[in-house]
Image 1 (spheres, one colour):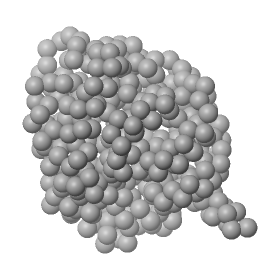
Image 2 (image 1 turned 60 degrees about the vertical axis):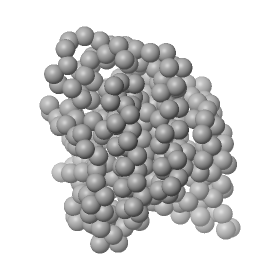
Image 3 (image 1 turned 90 degrees about the vertical axis):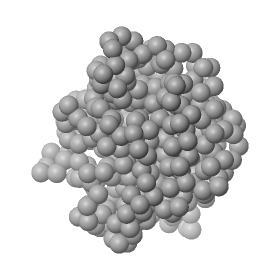
Image 4 (image 1 turned 90 degrees about the horizontal axis):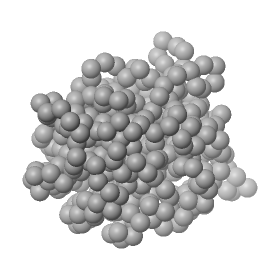
Length: 361
């Protein structure tokens, strides 16, 4: 298992790379999505999505990331003695019609294929993605963690219809007329049909390029959000995803927090099943208290999840991928996000060392 940290584009500095290395990280997962805010995210202070009734950002990207851009990012990481393990999330501007089955889906798919070739050529082994129409929505923020630390949670599903010109909780067409995005108001089976086309088109290129595609489950894990179906909101749907196109490049971006939010699920058993299939690309690790429709994200050591038990399951199945703390409450300090991440990384590193030691005792 590799301890890793997640950075957004604006985090890509030598100082932050050294920060990650000083905290014990050997690998990085990087978001290259450029978000254009109406205002700062109220929880993280940066561009990590929380979601609201209007959508929280605008995407202006249309050209996929070039090989030169990806190689330059990897070179920055290499120079600081770290390893770039994965890119996380396509910009919605790259593939909104792939998601919506719109008129540009073939040309956008051709561009995604080129992007995967670029990623493979740059020597980046994993591409994380979330095949979702509404994206991260229905979250609320507040002083939910220990000591009143700011965190996020959920108190029921957001049923406000997705407007035209929006997908994945971001505006891709600011000039779209008023009204409901009917291309997003489909059945679950229609969504799975779109996804099957996506997999069958892109995975052969991923295999040729030695890039694992790692699928994130839907967060929050409701069957429908904002009038749109969700792809993976139960563990058995992750198995359906894997069975749809059996391949070593068809893998999971295993989000432990999202699995724990799923109502009535034995997520320890689910983690063991996925690990036994050698189907995990990399892991998001956070802690939560409660399940949908009501839950709160907590500090890594205070929620319902036994972090040691999760890591022990992964170790037992010889999981060798990256583990990142994907979210963290904000700590009251001059650097709330950095302090919260430092706390989470230290705890996870200690648990990883304990698992390693216990396996040899």
